[in-house]
Amino acid sequence: MQAATALGLSVVGSLGGLLTASAFLLIGDRVRTRLVPSLISYAVGTLLGAALLGLLPEALEALRPSQAFAALLAGIFTFFILEKLVLWRHCHDSADCMVHQTTATLVIVGDAFHTFVDGAVIAAAVMTSLPLGMTTALAIAAHEVPQEVGDFAILMAAGYPARKAFTLNLLAGLAGLAGAAVMLGSAASAPRLLPWVLAFASGNFLYVAMADLIPSLHRGGPGHAATTNGGAFLQVLLIAAGTATIVLL
Image (cartoon, rainbow, N blue to C red; front, side, top):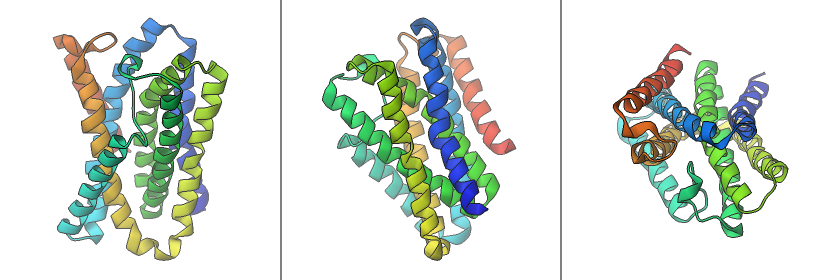
């Protein structure tokens, strides 16, 4: 039962964002560019809430603070290095990306790797507690929506038709199931590994929220409402809503 739940939530986290993002292909560019910043703001709240109010407290129950924060720091450094090596990247504004075939390939490879990690994190959270698994899956799905919208933009700008772009992103998303399966397969050593995985994942969530998503909200420009006081207030409200969602679950 636990394994089925973990695999099911990994599908929600990995593919839920993709399926939602694909619906954005059906709406006009102007509407899409106005909606994406709101989705990013909500995703920031869910990621921060899941990291600081869900994953990290669970890890601290089993690890000394120095151990938990060392694993968190390792998560931040790992994803910083991976991003520098261009193994994966997030792009929420296609104007900021060099669009060519190599970039498109890296987007798919990077998505597969990141989704694999997400699946493993969701499974680890479910093995700790079902509510933690649900909030973790929600945070990942919320983050995946704006990420996948940007990835679709990159692939289509590189010459991929919409159907092929969707298929490639879907295949990358299936890596989440593989990540969950690997974590479940290590169940024998899970009691020892789980708190480390949760603390490491909290570093991942914090890095994505604070090094990737929040700066994109500060940049402003087309589709970004940060240039007005009303837009900034809306961002704060949506970030708070994302965090509140995690707390209420």
